[in-house]
Length: 499
Picture (cartoon, helix red, strand yellow):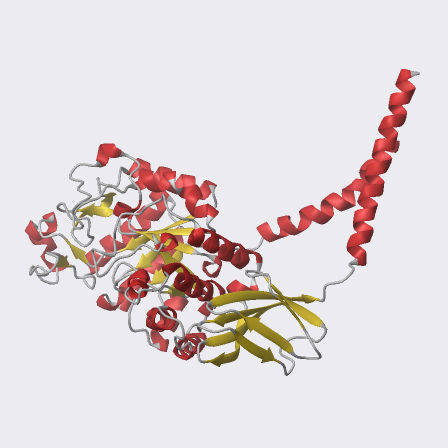
């Protein structure tokens, strides 16, 4: 009887701690919840030397050995940093000895340098076991100059022109041709069915008709309802955005923020106003602005570290400023492989150097912390945003979602800054608790005074003022009393057995 009473006493406390986690797991996961790690397969990690034919690590244009097995080996490395999705460079079987995509010879096979279809399925399965999603670069604009279609009279209308691209040797397909379109759309569906991948980044959308992408989106969603489709195009009118969004293409690579981010964060005192102007434009342009993808560099441009090193500055400090903005402002952070070690590189292929894993962990730890905050606080992923202060490289904005309010202060200057926020932007009688630097700002009336050191970012949670938490004290006391009763019963039973 006493055991039963003790069990009943403990059940409420166990439920108290268990229910929030269970409820959180049941929330629907959407594209806006992701943190994406974008990698060039060949340059990431070599996990299977048996597919290293033609590998030359001293030639930036040749294959360097990275493969599916190498990515599988490093899934924990990525998950531990807080990444939730992995964006892979194109995997279609390619002609020649160059790892650059676009010279496709078979859309239904992975390139032999990366591994077999079996190894790719193993990667996807292993990623899913760790709750990681796999997204592929879907590049169907061109084929290689020796593709069988070029010698097949029946495929004559599949090709826009037999003329090769002088820089790459690739030949452009005609996706307007009904047979070509049908083949490519069917192929896109096949990869989803066959390997259970989770998304496509749709490359070169500007070069292919809207009707093709709409057909592909419909087919992909028919196979897998929650399949991610991310558009990649330079010019997006609001009319185009709405048409694509209606078809299920929810996210778009946001080129408009890249240059303002690089300009602002490559040096102290960088102007933040263009960044927030573009951010405001995006809030109006997209139906789901939280699902747009932000990136500060990628395979098509010099690395952000290159800009920093050109100014003889500390890459770690500048990267922290940029990453803080990317993780706390609306949109999905897309982090190019090697950013966590401040990998350097100019124009391609120099920006696609081999990844290194034996390095300092300063940036890795910082990215991990940002990932934890973004995961814990929904307002950083899907909340509304309001710019409260912006002047000469110092900015404060707040994110609000349901009952949760966060504030983000970015001091992108070379001096300490003081900012006073009043006018009812935050509730009276509360405090802003710093989650990155441990700062604490208590209200005086309706005014909150934020003091932030140079080249620092702080993420604040709006919370009740610290004090004696009587509810917590009573709960802890009840647990201690229940434990004491349990010990007393054990001791009493022991005495009885001895007698």
